[in-house]
Length: 185
Ligand code: NI
Image (cartoon, rainbow, N blue to C red; front, side, top):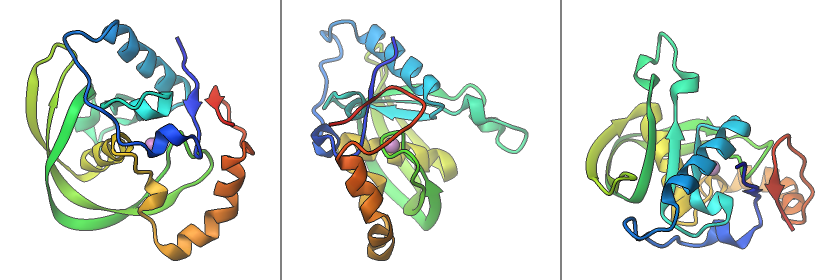
């Protein structure tokens, strides 16, 4: 089932999400399936709980659709991250353009560390401790920010924020159009 994607201005996007009870969560598999379906429908590569109105520490990532010869490591990279905790952020800080399904039509350069270490659980409750770098680290940090109530627009320069302020203000008031199902005011 395709869920509505919550748009900039919806309070849930600014909330720090809560850990989920993986063993007792009702229909967790169904939620994960719905999140993937919602993400594919909107042509995204990541989607977090707050973006579908849930202040819960869950996000999904699928980089397979953007895999190519240069990025063969994206092939089959489809994962759900539950109760994730980034335990290390190291390496160079790089600024690369990002977008977000909750902020349609806006792309800005966002500074992020190049390497991360992340601890999380999968849908079977199995714990993982993994390291990522480059684009994968960036996507994971973007989604992880969502479960901490942080949007990429919180990380851009004050100048850039001023440049997009009126667009964001409009979005907050429901002035937005995009090709997928959304929830706004
Ligand atoms: Ni996003």
